[in-house]
Amino acid sequence: MTNELIDDLKWRGLLYQTTDEEALAELLNKESISLYCGVDPTADSLHIGHIVPFLTLRRFQKHGHRPIVLVGGATGMIGDPSFKADERQLLSEEQLAHNVAGIRSQLEQIFDFSDENAAVMVNNKDWFGKMTAIDFLRDYGKLLSVNYMLAKENVATRLETGISFTEFSYMLIQGSDFNHLYDHYNCRVQVGGSDQWGNITTGLEIIRKTHDEHAKAFGLTIPLVTKADGTKFGKTAGGSVWLDPEKTSPYEFYQFWINTADADVIKYLKIFTFLAKEEIAELEKAVEEEPHLRKAQKTLAEEMTRLIHGDEALAQAERITAALFSGDLKALSVSEMKDAFKDVPSFEMAKEDRNIVDLLVGAGISSSKRQAREDVTNGAISINGERIKELDYTIGSADRLDDAFTIIRRGKKKYTMIKFN
Image (cartoon, rainbow, N blue to C red; front, side, top):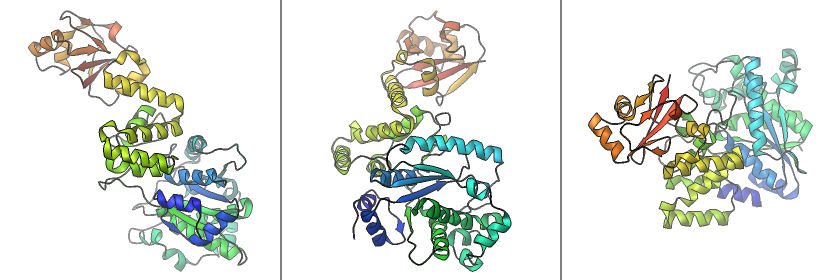
């Protein structure tokens, strides 16, 4: 039996494993279901590697199903050992509460919490926080044998280096989450990354053991996203690409997507956007016939920035991008300038007026005074977007943006930020 949504997930490369694909397709054809995906609040922001399962859950919502988004306030206190070489550092309750709040606000950008199949957000600390250790061991500890747990790949890979009882118990706790959601929300499917297969099937085992033979629940995993060249997806020279605009600005976020390689862009459009097959097919044609126009990359950057940060942030990112391309920095606000140039080479100096030639040499922008004078008179130097051609020009307080920095451009592309202390 086929199902339109399952077929779409396959076409997008989003289906890695299912516990019973035919029965799941039959269920989706028959009724609207509830299904869930969870994340542990190990940081106060998600990064783009986290969101593929949630975007997949959103696809289910668009087909009339109800997503349950679980933020693991309890499991976050334990730590998932799945394919991690070392034990995780335990976080304080205060840090976890802070992280939960940050992640919740980001997930609210992705899901619709208002329509007839409105998303539900839950925190597993709400049920595990009330349970005693004795209750947990009596009610759940008897459901799985140690042999069963040791056979799971996500635990087996840690046996040589060592695993604490705390992390060993993680799969039992997460599996109990699925059982709780099955009982209280009629949740029938858990969605997760491919590394979560062991935890998901443990949940199905607990449901099987605590219900009659008619209980029907399913697991679905999504493949790890990779680049065509084999390097890790979602990383830049500066580290992870975060959803938090304070960690990765909307401009940086936009730039990450617009710099996607031709070999990856159609794959990412399928995985990350909600564009229809026909639209993606048109963009694939554009990559083949007009790669220099980068239509697919621009569409990917627009779709993702709008989804995570909204229309206003997208407009700002596009404005900064256009200003940098044209060299017309006057169109940017001071905060946009700071954002756009925070990763360019910088030079620190004291707050005092300086002749432009002396500053260019002192900051290493021009190699000598002779070269600096030539650069100025040839119109190759701009200060905060204004071309300067006078050799006696003095860079003073009026050129210090926020009384803290000045942007100097030499030629078409070489930018330097002068930071004043």
